[in-house]
Image 1 (cartoon, rainbow, N blue to C red):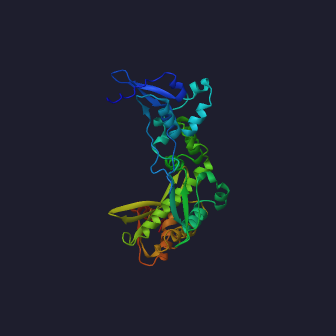
Image 2: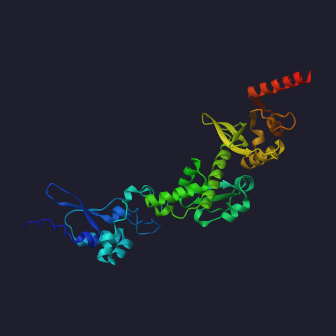
Image 3: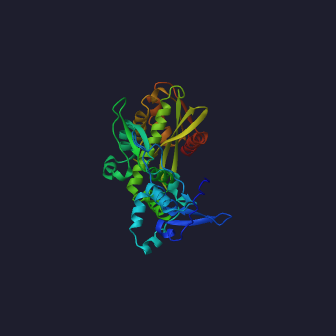
Length: 366
């Protein structure tokens, strides 16, 4: 008895609308290849892999193509298994609604969210309590404002660790929000501009996951990023195998008419000399050398309590607040450490001081 020939059920045009299909190509014999439009425009359903569950692997992200035999049974099996909610809703639509269903949709391959699993991706950081409480809450930002702006939409969970040193666990639940916020703020945009830009990206790229962000959430993410960066610096300083000493470098600058003091930290790390930005302090009249010293000491104590034993050098640009013999910031820092410190300040400022003293003597007749 000869075997039965394979089924060659042809594609039926009424299935275009009934099952949301589209012919995308034909072979040399004229046989069509049919694509599932639900896969193209919406993607397959996400499936969570749980312990003890029946699903053993993650759902696929490719597009389903059908070839002969073109049977309704194959279509329904795919739609029920990969697009259950959309397929159930689609079946309840009128003929005219089905004709319009895919018209305003963008192919999923042309959107941002196809490149990452937005339903499960998250970022978790562990940050020591002094960095959060003293630096972020006490020095850099207004603690009351932080509490008022606290918002569940930011996806931040802070809690004390139950073991070891007190710390906070911060969980970022919307990674795309977080990464875009850091990118835009890092490019120089304000919090409000960043929120607007991400909102525009959501509308243009049709990424629902980006909906709902505002400048308060942006501010929360920036605080998290600052804390993460400071925690990284603290971990580096605490690495006894790599870092046995470090130095501080201060420079007075002006930005948009506002004078500020930029403090950088220099250390050797895995074969490289790093020059890391630590803090920028505005220099108003009330910000004396003593006030600046107290603020920097408070920051260093929270960042790395043993800093006094590892500081070996301090350099400055020679600005008056920096170089005064008894009241300068550098003098106070040098007096606070455990060992001798090398002090360096730039030659042009030294020459300028000498020139001023010489001019004063000439003017005074001495």
